[in-house]
Image (tube, helix red, strand yellow):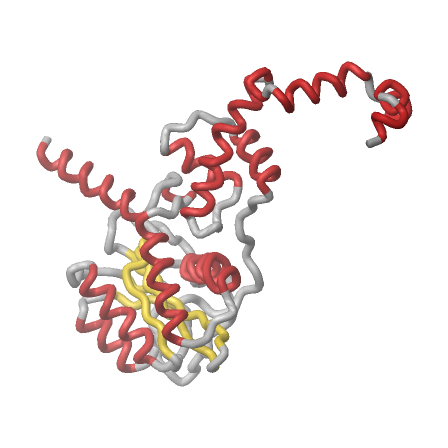
Length: 292
């Protein structure tokens, strides 16, 4: 409109750009094939960035998207991924405020702290951590319990219920026991919540051949790994996909997230690979060493 009225050169003079820049932009709009190599590389990788972000529940930020692209054989710089995600207006989820569900029972006998904040394991089924979190729904609060294997960070048991009683964590523990083939000698670590130091739960751990461990008093890191899992769950599911109608909706969403977390999510502490793959690598190497 203004070009016909004032002409290109006067407009460029006011905007302080060279007329040649304007004419080149018009040529490139008409003939995209004449654009620079980086433009074509960007256009080729943009759909892949969008796909990885969508396939991973729209949770991944720059680093995780970049790592996944590398795993799939795409050779692209992290700075390129960061730039293009900004162009595409994509970003990873961020954690919110931590929820507190620990209600200590000072009258109950408490096991010793066998972990002392050292959340490391040399093999699967050596150390499990457990914790509870909650979800606000239209029909009231529901509670979610997780049991996680420290070695691979794999979630081996979980349960969703409307009550925070001992049955919630017992069900999560039973699922973990059956899923892992009822291992013996596992150290089970939790906070000092009344559910975890209850007689029923303590007796079940003893029957399973587990060593019970609870965090120390006044230590904000006494069950840090389990709380990390809770934080990821709240960030990547609850805060992102809510509001929630009730227990069934939360249960289905949790099932979907646990499957993705165990089989696809890249975890930094284990080398940016999924937990299942990390355990498969361990058992394959163990078999090779045994054969040798």
